[in-house]
Image 1 (cartoon, rainbow, N blue to C red):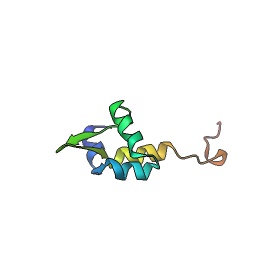
Image 2: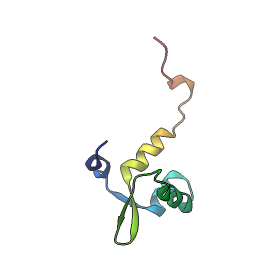
Image 3: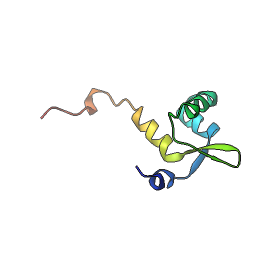
Length: 72
């Protein structure tokens, strides 16, 4: 995914992104420092691309065995 595609959905404050992910904002700050999530730093504040949060939520979904790829 390009930077432009990642930013197309806008940016979120760390507190909002953490709430959507169901984690403490301090955990998200740690992930930022460890470069585990994409971020930008604007006017003294970290921002997380909304699309990155969406991707993390989708990656974390557990749909169960009925939705797993079936062997051909």
